[in-house]
Image (cartoon, rainbow, N blue to C red; front, side, top):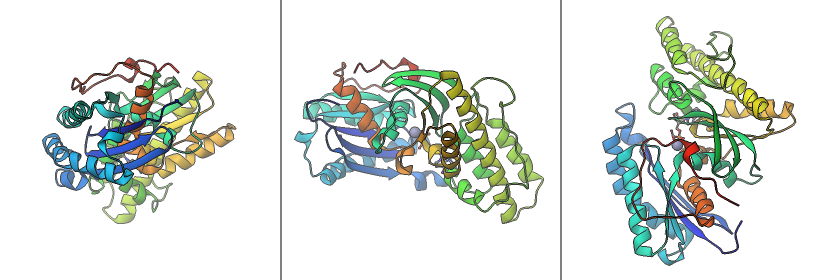
Length: 344
Ligand code: KG4
Ligand code: ZN
């Protein structure tokens, strides 16, 4: 990738996870520390931005120290600092951006503002057999559902996206309807394993017309009506979870196929929190096998928010010798297609 060995400290604070990692251009991931705020927000049924920022302030510096200790490195061994600059909660982003810029100033190294979704998108490259360009990426997180044509680092063309709720958001809202704790995506999926797939049938939104956009808010309403009109027993809940998950997975698969056909690419990458979903992974493995190709994804802890993906994306950008700045930069909204390409 590059001649000089480079070690980047990555900082993620865009939402409810404080993540810090160190990625080495020669030796790969040297440290990965994560603190999840799930317990902090559980009573509120969702992320409380002010509480998130305060908790990042408490946890971030100790996690940086823990990452250095895990990697058996000191500050002088770090060549650059990458931090999530957006999109996300502004207060939470400011914590990471401020700490990153301050450390970069003190350690006399560059700081690089990383796009959270670029982090997710490149996370499968942290694994062995990482995907080569070009590929179609399905980015499915708590805040985004996007299909993207990826021809290189920073070469992203949006093919389609959700016109309302993100897939993860729909999982979480439906989980709440079923009485599961926030964020219920993973728990809904577990419950769905015990469900009967034939008892309920949910629609596959926006699949009966051409195009690559998604809509998931109707599914959540469909789930609400089904819950309202059904008995309150555990098996019924599992059956609803199963019908909901099957509908989301089917819909995502139909759109992935269309995106592959439209671009002519034969590789598919899935990233973001919902790409940890086992049914989605299994069904996509089958679908891609039939096409004589394969789907790439990261291990589950690198699908949800983490510092490793930010360190890695930061390394790719820093090693391309692009301009860096110590200015604290955060963006609540930031289209992925605004990123400059990395010239290799
Ligand atoms: O990427 P992520 O950690 O945060 C954002 O950037 O949004 O994604 C979190 C989302 C949540 O909505 C969570 O419920 C969902 O990913 N999620 C899952 C699973 N694991 C996490 N959804 C379905 N099945 C899972 N196994
Ligand atoms: Zn994320």
